[in-house]
Amino acid sequence: METVRLALIVSFLVTFSGLVQAQYVPEEKRQTETAADTTAPKKKEKTQAGREKPEKAPKVKSESTNSFWKKISFGGNIGGGFGDPTFLDISPTIGYKLSDKFELGLGPNYAYYRFKNDSFSADDHLYGGRVYGQFNLTKSIFARGEIESIRVSFPDSGLAEAPVRR
Image (cartoon, rainbow, N blue to C red; front, side, top):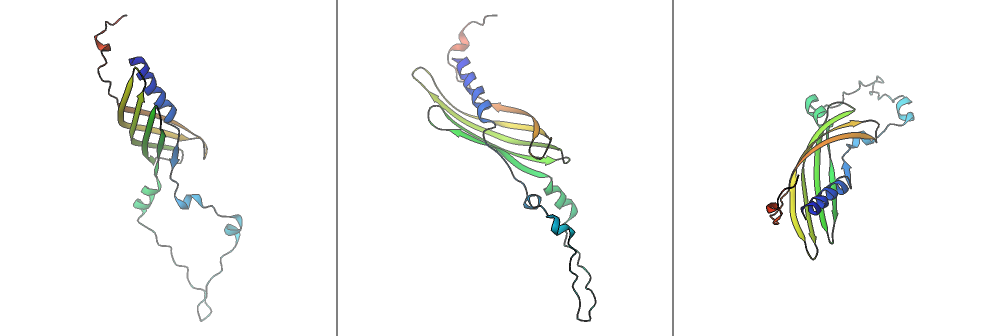
């Protein structure tokens, strides 16, 4: 029975860990300039005397605050299945871009599962955390390495008293 339970947990985590993924992209990164906008000269404003007005410098936020938040990314997984068995998985992440290609991040994990049949039932809350590193190969393709630590409870089913065979 322990083998069945462990197989269910592992298959649940493998199947649903990448079911839904999301990542927030700031609006200024989503907008692109057209070729016409970049090549067209800007019209200069003139004063009443006919002289050109000097261009105003754009307002800039503190350089360190602005650059820090541009390097932060949010994402994660949400997955679920209801019926028998029932699964729910919520795993948000937050990452920091060390460069244009590489990001390090972390996040909590929470999963709930319930399984019932005539001879076996299981109901548990799994939780833990993860740390990851992600290398962006292109804009939409990346390689990711991740390590997780998850708390799983195995109630005493009487199997612990059986002799261990080697």
